Image 1 (cartoon, one colour):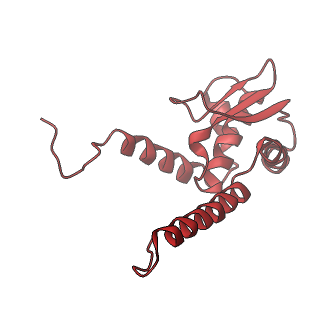
Image 2 (tube, helix red, strand yellow):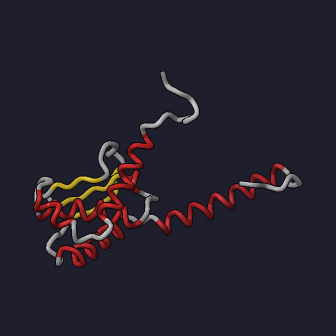
Length: 147
């Protein structure tokens, strides 16, 4: 954030606080909560799976660091990693559809992937997630070689 040099320390502190509050408000409006996530899953199921995939619960979780999402078909529960927050909507939609598809087809066989062919951004979303995963493995400073 750029702040005019003429501002006093007190003015700077107040301005930073105001701007952080504005950013937090924007973020909370942009990232859906659990209820909105469940509604979104319902809409996606209706649009791509004729409403056949019905989740009993859909929620964000903070304990998934190696997966983008997970599904427990016996319970009808879907969990999405908090790491997806802030990613493009089409990516979140893809992960939701991926987990919804598991309510219809267990595993990742041909029938499973056939279901996901209905979503036109499947490959794009998968590429995005692969890029994020690859970037996470890069050194923090790309100009420094790791020997």
